[in-house]
Length: 121
Image (tube, rainbow, N blue to C red):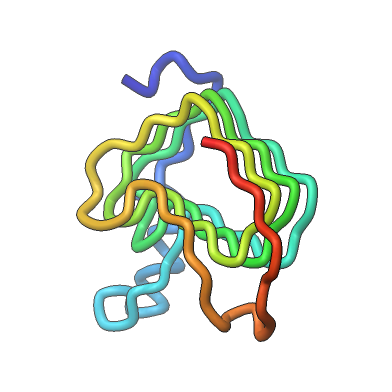
């Protein structure tokens, strides 16, 4: 199903598999296929992601994000947006996983309160 994309990132191959093993991911879940913190102007499109560890996408304190036309085959969480602002998400398909497919969250991981948020899904 991911074949229509130009590239597919597979979390069970290469660096993610090794880094999760070294981090003891079974005991300390936290390995991520794709994570960004405090980044602005992000655009992700026309790509596929599969078997992404505990999180396939974890975005913390990001702004001006455009996610479109891609597919995720999650191992657990698909896309988690924490303290994100100005997000446009369109034509995203999340399959499998045992927890969040697409989650909008707010916590103190950014060490400050967010007052204004705009999301379009």
